[in-house]
Image 1 (cartoon, helix red, strand yellow):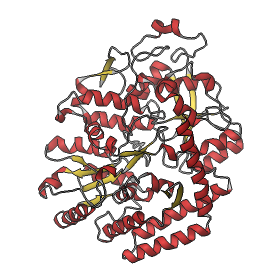
Image 2 (cartoon, rainbow, N blue to C red; image 1 turned 180 degrees about the horizontal axis):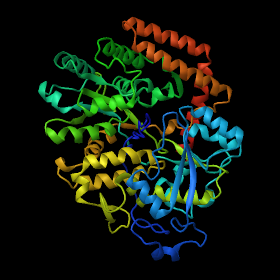
Image 3 (cartoon, rainbow, N blue to C red; image 1 turned 120 degrees about the vertical axis):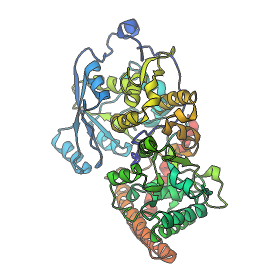
Length: 551
């Protein structure tokens, strides 16, 4: 759920924020023992040199390389407290203070690096080429969860130019996943006669009706519009198979990546979005509001339509809260909006990739890098993921099924959705190595056995809508240049320009002005070296395609 993605994550989704999505995984115990297995029962299968969590204290520092990220206090919730007490692991956070690039540069310059860093894939090579990272290759067979759940294909796509693996991925998968889409206020929708809500024309008419009948309600809430969020979701309504493109700041045409400013569907989508904004159908503080302000509106039911990269995180909690006192209140999700004439089954408001969202690296400052890797490998396995997603054993789950992995959910799982949602709102920001396959397979299997009214809100709509409407963007991973290269400098210029142009287009006075803003954006982008950047990204994209075909 980038934020996100938290927007995922992520999330949340992250996210946030259950930045989860769906696949199926292999059952059975791994050679070093998994969930529900006592260490002594499997010790005979373990190489003597394997690090065992819980036998000694493991303290390490973790830096989250994001302006927005503040790690929850380790031991401040029931899950991390359980991990701390039973696995003897204590994760000490290092915060960016809202200035992530400066923070990382300072740590590199002074040589005072944290033991582990959670960051975007594009930033890894800067650290690797400076010989600051520990490779994981010697650990993969000793601690088999990553190799089992991601597989050799995914691991090979993460390898650096020297052939070694330095990155532990987050929210990796082999099947569609994601939470992007549209959430609708059930009570308002019903009171307005449950009108058809499928096309962009339908959405426009509905939002106008909301504004007329409910002056104190936000017709369309786009989450953090400054990050794209609900604006990019609207773009998907105009272009089949599109959602990967806003984040790339480029659009595929044949075998080349071309300017997004000139893309006809992007231009039409920005005209539509600007029209909604001009007519006050979109919240007027869309570019400045905070996540807390957004959450408060959704939680109190003062939003008619809520769209983002991961609206399920907030909406799930809001639905549980609103339905406590009024069974007719709450939220539901709809199939993604599409322009008339666009195939609704080719509209994808979000994307997923085999390698997921971001990664964790271990630096050479770590006294025991293997122990840290062992912890992350446990965390991405069935027991670690069950604890992060559903709390420690004995509350929402207790024990495992015959496969030794799948948790047995308790009655509290279905009766206390609000409590579980609050727990996940914290633990999603501690899930640095999310295992999408395990979590989504586990959730879906259990939820399908329940009556609809007892099903987890988020899981139900993931299964019915969001997992079916996210497109595969794996071919576009790792196409950005390094920040300190010529293309990397151009990329930053284009990034800044794109955000500026999008904001100006949103505030345009009419459709003609939207196009004028985009035309000037194209001119300025070319002057900044946009063609050179597009050529670089195209080469990387084509290399990815060749690599994927060869594997």
